[in-house]
Length: 351
Image 1 (cartoon, rainbow, N blue to C red):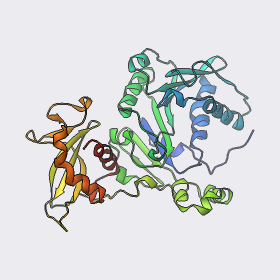
Image 2: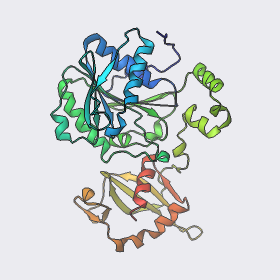
Image 3: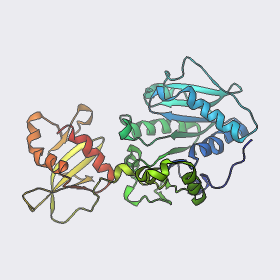
Image 4: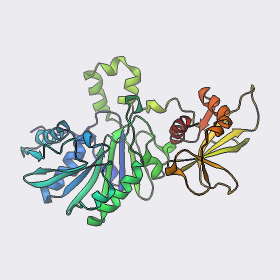
C-alpha cells in the first residue's frame, strides 16, 4: 500500500463552506480524482455501503479503463484488494448502469442522454453523493456540453435528493475555461474566480485550487513538456484559462445603447452599440440582461427557445446583424464575462 502525502489535493477546505453544489477547478495533476474516489466515494461505501452517482455526458464515456482506474486508485492506497464488477454488455452502451463491490452497488453511472423519466424510476437508497469528473469541456478537442446540461443536472439532483435531503454534488475538472453551463445556471461570477480562492453563493462553492509549491517543483522536474512549452505550462501548472485569453472583458461604457437582444440557452443576451463612430467602425458590448422592454423584438434561433415576446430569426433578418458580425471578426466587441463570449460564438453561426 502506498502512503498518501500532504501536497496533493484535499476536499477539506471547500467542505468547510458546507455548500450543496461544489466545483473544484485546478491545473493538472493535484490528485482531484484520487481524493474524490478515496475520500468521498469509497470511504463512505466501506464504512456503511453508501452508494454514489457518477454523471457522464454520453454512455460511451463509461469505459472499462475508467472503472479500472477507480479500482487501481483504491488498491494503490489501501490494502483492501477490491474488485469492481459490472455487466460487460452494458459498459459504454447503457445510459444508466451500476457497478458493484462484493455484490453491493458501489457507483451508479448516469449519462445525460438518459431520459429523465427513466432516471426517476431508478432511485438509490442509502445515497452518498453525486459527482462528475472532467466536467469542463475543451472545445479545442471537439468536446461539447450536452444540450440543456445544467437543467438536466438539476432534474437529476432534485430526483435523487428525495433519498438524501443533505445530498451534495461535486464537479471536478481542469481549467480549460471559466465558462461552463453550470456557472451560468447557478449565477456564478466568473470575474471573481481567482487561483487559490473559493467563491460562494447560497448553494454553491467554487474552488480554484492552486498546486502545492512542492508538487509544482516535482512536476517541473519530471515532465519535459512543462520545461519547453510555456503555453502548456500556463494551463497545466499555473491554472491559466488559456481558452479565455482571447476574450476582451470590460464593463459597459456609458455611451452605449441596447441595439439587439437574443434569447439563447434560457438567457437574454444584450448587444450594446457605441453611440459614436470611431474610424468608421462600430464597436459593441455584450452582457446578459434581465429586463427587456415589451416593445423590443427578441431574436431566437430554434423552436426550443421560442417563448413569449421572441421571434424566430428569419433569413431576411440576418443583414441587420452584418456590422455586428464584422465587429466580431475584427475583435471590436467587449464582453461583461466569459460566458457572454461563448454564447455569442454560438450565435455567430446563426446570424
